[in-house]
Image (cartoon, rainbow, N blue to C red):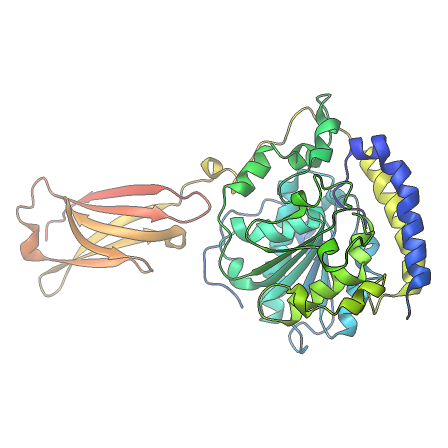
Length: 422
């Protein structure tokens, strides 16, 4: 249930806030009334396949259910059981959604670049099993992972319908800076700093077409700061909880069980496009926990979840610097695709020119003879032909392919071959 938490927050004031959060949960419990894409996959996943497979758990009929599947992604220091078992997993299942969860490595306390791979795997696998586009709901770090995965792996936008984030530090958080000021903090804390290299990589990417993005923030978030600005995702439908229900006293921890945030999430999941606060009844402001929550499980799980996550975070060893960016977050670290230019003499006095190899990494090709453009191609199989008469004089003339690459590396390649003798 605890999201993007770091040492400074725990050491400075989170233990004091912890009691308040536990009390808020207790009060809430008492107050409740009853399509696989055709795009290239992008950067290869480096986490062990067996670990990726074990991290994913699904419940419900993925292929036959009326509603499409939803993947839940927990926050830093937490687990699917602690964040979602009493709330979203139970309530969405009652609405007919098949629900899948992702267990992040080491509870999300590691380099976030590793955690991204578990979300990428989950999206692909659930889309494959269901034969449908999937939606994601993430809390805190889970919101960041759920949103930005589609920015960096080019096959994902075609597989994702909605992404709903709860208290996601999309722009980093100033609450992380003090914990790293001494020169050592956990990997995720380095990456949550607003000036981190990972946040710069996020800011440098364009929002992908296809998925609908909803970001739900609270003005009383003590961990994603400055609140609520740090919890807003550029280009998304951004909803501040207090704009819907003024002065609603919900902070970072409890947002994952809040009735209004849940109503906004369900609105996004059940309508085309992102959430629209105008469709949420203002009577929802009178509720505390979401309808459909398992109150017995909430009473047993929620308070312990906050304490367990806090303990995991404060006992996570620090490192001396931010983890180095790798592909796809650093395009320069991505290996270039293996491509070659082929040419052969064909019938009817023509020469056939083709691009071969990793053509899925190609966005556009200009086939040229010397400086003359023969053909511009924007889709495989990237083939052109040249009349034999246009090849004279054969000496000193070269065929060229100017190749524009798509993600993750981007950039251009120029391939050249001499004219063949037919």
